[in-house]
Amino acid sequence: MMSFARNYVRIVDAVNYRIGRVMMYSLFAMFAVLLWSSISKTFFMPSMWTLEVAQFFMVAYYIMGGPYSLQLGANVRMDLFYGNWTIKQKAWMDVFTVFVLIFYLGVLLYGAIDSTTYALKYNERSPTAWRPLMWPIKIIMCTGIFLMLLQAISELFKDIAQIKGTPITGSRIAGPKNEGPKNEGDDL
Image (cartoon, rainbow, N blue to C red; front, side, top):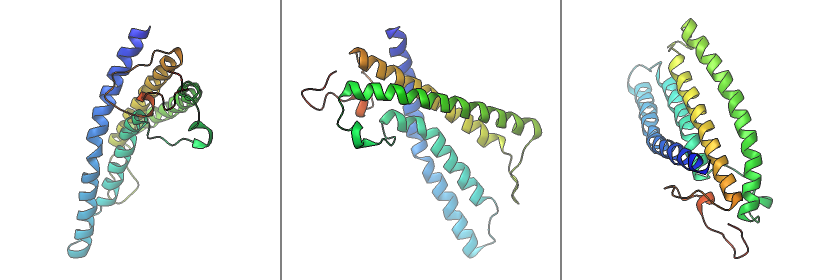
């Protein structure tokens, strides 16, 4: 079981790491679109497509970068109590909260697949003047939610291994879960 978990974590972390690093640069594409929007409104005829394309880039950046953010431990936590806990206590809390996250992502993925199926079946278009097809961005959303679900399961495996005292290491990411104990009294 532990070898399966280690392989799963290694593969999922590697995939989400690479996708996250690529998605970091998609902001430049969004900036270029918004720059063109400003230039075209000032000097030429305003483009109908720029705002919506920028929104699509932002959705892709946010959704596809989410697993990478979770992997880095960049998600927001209420640090009132959590910051003073031992690594094992943090892992127990993370196990509890990751189950909530997995349930939420499962429901979200179910709705996203249903919405994407509708968009493909009926050739759904945006109700704006430009009227782009909606299925490409919905497929990106489904993919991002699925990758986030895989990453949440990876984090669950890491937390369970931490609780058992055999942390899964070897990840190229140095985040809060991959650091050693902060204090002498912290458990491994």
